[in-house]
Image 1: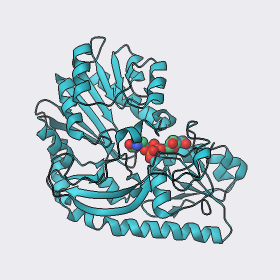
Image 2: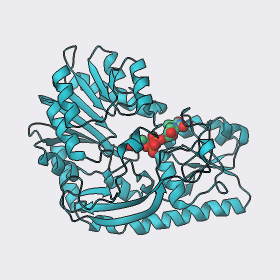
Image 3: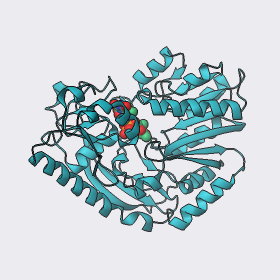
Length: 409
Ligand code: JHZ
């Protein structure tokens, strides 16, 4: 269903600025026995709301279809992400003086990759995640988890049963909720008066400036800035009090700290001023993005076609959701890239949505030695290159698709 009003402000002035056509769901990997069946496809279009300053997609796919039926994303397959989660937990324990009487709630707790760090030091936690397989792994690792979607109803139930939360963590989920107002209301309901909410999400400024168009898919309803977060929180009586930038996380992410009271740091004030000066709160910032995206799609396709016609073999690394967007919107079929490798064992044996490359174990790269590997999970470039030293030493080469298609030497 196409929306006509902003999901945050309710404004009817949504200005479309990028149309990526009609694509299958990026995490709906295909089983071998279903390759002949037509896959559901949905329009993928971005729009900007001047009132909320929020960039969002215009299509609403039901969340069950996105995060329960097809969801094979497990957070624990990146060492970088695990390290980042451990550091975050350690800092929270220290700075918030958390102990055996505290409560840490994580929304979208996935396989327990983050909350495990609190459990290890005896701090009570509660995870919330609607994806059943990920939640089962979390529970097996000692992280109590409610297998549900978060919203104000659930927040009340948690509050009544467990008390208010000292810390609520919402990492890589603030883009994923169609009813962002009910979700945010729930955060306010569950948060202790002196508690904090920390929210991490890719930064829309990096998306636009570094042309990370492949991070656009139906799971990502929103592409946030400090301005959009601040306006959204104010509508819910909450305050954006701090912000921190992680350039190496998912192509550039921000961590926002939110609370019940006005404790805005200098950094928040600076970010808001910089975003205004750069124009992120106006449609002009976004209008020429579509032209740059078209150029990348064209150049990448031309590069791959040239390499293939020169006789080179090409595989890809990372059955990531962003990989599905890239393959489908550029039009990279199995004739150009024959397979994808990924170390998530739950994805191996399946096929990429739409383009149908089989997903194999990364060890295949050393056996098969394709001439080139298209790095779909470019956000983990350093980690993957370090793991693939033997493939590179044997003469293999990586192609990075964004911000401009580049063969790494
Ligand atoms: P990855 C994810 O998007 C998930 P995706 C989610 N949609 C989100 O919001 C964004 O992040 C921010 C594999 N891999 O994380 C694991 C290896 O094989 O970039 C993954 O399948 N070897 C919630 O799906 C894929 O690559 C490795 O060494 O676009 C990476 O997917 C590493 C590090 C990863 O995300």
